[in-house]
Length: 108
Length: 114
Image 1: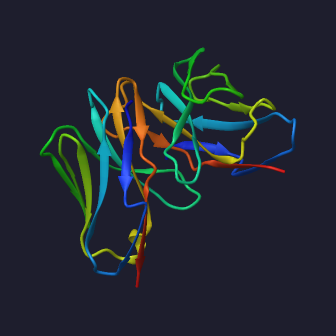
Image 2: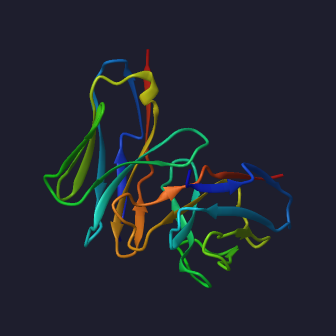
Image 3: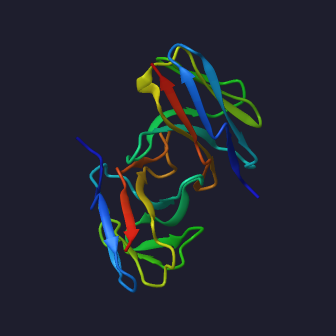
């Protein structure tokens, strides 16, 4: 069964404390791995798309990487405004499979 | 600015009632989707439509219905047959083949059964 898991479920960091979020997928025939940010009570917003193992994308304090089985979202020196739920999704066929998300809290 | 508009933001449903959630997009996207989001679970696909007047069931279509009479609009009706409708509902759209940015999402409708 195609599925996507994310860990940890929740993560609390102090401002400036770097860490990584994990997204593991078992989808066959992956056409893309997407990362989204979701703020409470709002829809997800696009962050990155990764297509092949070894690929990396960066945006401000965030860097996404992809292997054959996992993707990581690295957060360097986070700020309180980075607090949100981060979702990953695998694209296969015509649809997506979403992970449950990691809820990140960055404390000042 | 182009985007997706969902309304209402909050909706309350009584037992046995049908309710309709609105989703409108001005991105000229061909495909539109409805997802349900529950705490601790990934987004689950309810229905999707690749072209006007055509739509397909997703993973959890039972108790829901949709229509796609216009390219811009994809309303979702939650019927009385849906036994556990309390959730956050998200509408999304994309170009054919999803494109490099995947989906564009609306801001969601929170449905509560009272």
